[in-house]
Amino acid sequence: MTDAELAAHLAEVAGRLLLEVRASGVFQGKALGKAGDETANQFLCHALRAQRPDDGLLSEEEKDNPDRLAKSRVWIVDPVDGTREYGDERSDWAVHVGLAVDGAATIGAVALPGFEGGVVLRSDQPQALPPAPSRPRMVVSRTRPAAEAVAVAETLGAELVPMGSAGAKAMAVVLGQAEIYLHSGGQYEWDSCAPVAVAQAHGLHASRMDGTPLVYNQGDTYMPDLLICRAEWVGPVRNALASRTG
Image (cartoon, rainbow, N blue to C red; front, side):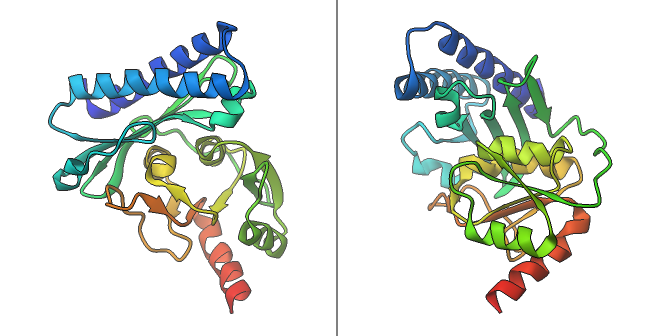
């Protein structure tokens, strides 16, 4: 099984497990989120250690092992991206399974189990982007839209599309439901590694807000900001950001 096939398989199976946990009716709200996180994390970490024992591993729900810093290949996973949305029984949550090679998001799979029929977007199976409307759409947090994103949307005349998890937002751009995902509120490596690998494989731009590369497998896993968008919107977004800071 190739790395990409493994990532997609594990993301899909973890998604099914999460749906089973939710359908059990045993947990609600925050307890459901906690149970889902722990169940999916245990599966993903055990599976990756069994299938790729020589690789490093970084998971949101696992104690960090600094040994990963000496490895070229590191799997970066988020068992439930959007725990609140999962616990609230919404559909805009995701499972991330990504592989960083020498600091670059190289392989990724993002499962959207809450979507009808379940969807897994993969870096090894890119699809053509749907036609874009003349007025761009920008995905933002449904609970706390970042000031920079709102300001850029106003400058570009973009329509704001509130959505839950980071993975769901990034995949909205891949699926043609939006053209821009700009996040300035801070994230962690597991929030974007798999989505960035998938987005780039589909021909989308992905970088820091200032255009510098996104670097993974760092000692400090905090990532301050992120831009994923169609190529034609990179310049306008940066110009809008520059006018705001200038």
